[in-house]
Image 1: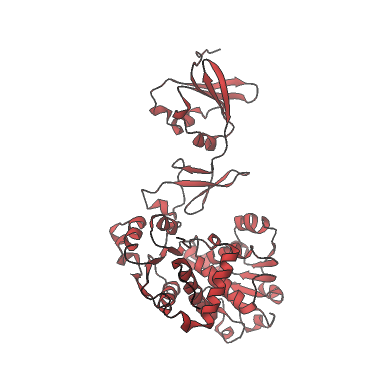
Image 2: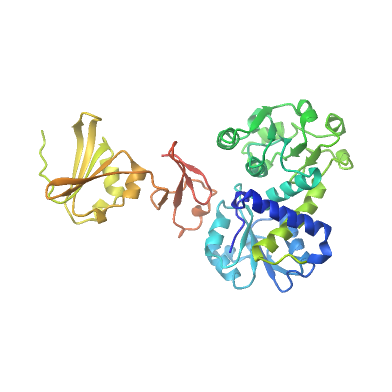
Length: 307
Length: 141
């Protein structure tokens, strides 16, 4: 039995198979409509989430399975003081697979150690969010046809942005990847990513402040939100929140083949006037998220691919 | 010059950094043993200037060498039988340590799940970096 706790739990070849399956699902959706008939997904969400929980539920329903669960700690036994270990042992009796979001880092690992069903980490605090990374990889692969030989720009909050750290970790495993890290000095990438991941893997990268100057060389622009909840000081948040706003004018500087991704929700870092640009891929990314979660559920449940 | 009687059978932990012997005494749980234990502090050493030494009567089964390797892998472990050193064990940094150090990250699951063991793994041998198994936070010695 396998779990998905960290995007690096799967080898490049395994991720490749998973993304190929997700792509087949995208193009042959009806073929998969009953592949998980009778199977149940438990969604254990100890903190609020719109996209991730609904994406998991949509994925399981699209496979013919059913869904049960809770969407806040208040409506679960956690409110009575039950441990994650006890909750997952109980849920293992009710469902075939579980997706869990919890504010504490490492909670999904604890669940997996006690579980008799596969556990998917749907976000454990600021630590890992592997299905977002798989979604990002699938979006890039589907739109560009590759996961190698490209320049990826990461823009905004690179210090606290968990999705950015995960994506860098996942993409350094492919050849010919170059990063342009665009952020204000206060929100630069943490030193352990710079030293232990980028430099240790001999990855070409540069750190810049100016988005306009970086635009022409990018194949992918990954925008992120400056997250209010990460700041202790309101003044710092207000000063930094609008430092990069992607608009039509900036999009004119980009290649015709560049794509804009964003893990969502956005606040104002991407102007709505960009939404109709064919290179705006952030809502397609949401759709790819469902396909990739379908593929992941099938893989972990060891369901045979239909002929 | 202080004289401590010889050890017929037991273990001598030599080359302990001066001043650390009491930490090691408690980390190894020597306070819970009923055998004789001698702690020598600030002994003169040609190699270290000053060093601490611990002499423990009895067999090696009393010691968790993994913990000792984490605390200070430069310590020499001498096994004594019939008043002679029959083996010198060198210590390595253990790949995993359990319930020796605690994760200090307030966002880690170990901060709320009281029964969980505190497990750290060796993430970088060269830089002697240990990370929490759950949250991957680096532990600063």
